[in-house]
Length: 373
Image (cartoon, rainbow, N blue to C red):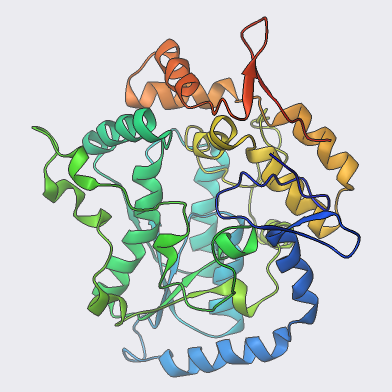
């Protein structure tokens, strides 16, 4: 396990690549991609986006939707809707997926604020809770992926709805695989391969089917077929605009977005403004810790270094203080939802610790063999 000498990301992040810089120091692909943004003509790329919008604008008639945006109500959703509706004059329909965990007060306000501030209709899917609980427990136990059920829907549902509404231009935020380090070595505007980015990769759906869960309960989980995908033009907004999570947050706050300040101090996070919609869902981001040795704090500490908001030394201190500390409120909400005890929860978590990366000390605590420094 080695770490990027420019940020704090380890080489255990799935798909990330490391090389040496001119000084012989380790540098990750996310830092390289971020530095390369300085060489990109974003004015020219925005003109490409304008041309795309011109192609689809009012395609379904004067009063019909001409694009779709996948949203959660978060900071990036506010920014995406601003760009597509206010800057480019499109008439978007917004598609959202509820995760069925306990919503934060911020989460309740933000989805309402998104609709009210920008004047948009939001069609939100409330998934089948019975199936969700059963599938979540199975993917948590077997793969250490507690929210795969929701993550998959976040990608597949907007595709299905864009087809139904005949809105080929389907807008996603950033390409997480390229932006933060993953399997995408080349940046492209197309999001047609979004299912391959590792967040909600294919699992064998047949293993979820039993006496209570039927194939028809899982129809929205299947990838769109090639013919349907070719009817759509899904894009990453991050290709056309210099993407910055913190800048999006500052913009969203100016338009009424609410963070978690004063509501919930999340022990494992380096910020209070990302994935703030509910309580239990963010477990998925922390589960990278036992499997890969890094989690939520590492993710944002690395970004903050790239954005010039933290020094690497400050980022290291933040990661060492928070990355391992899963918030108890998150644990309780997840356990209450799927119906397991916290004892069972921690037994499942312990099973997913990668002992190539960790050792157990005399107190029974899991510690990284190669600590960030």
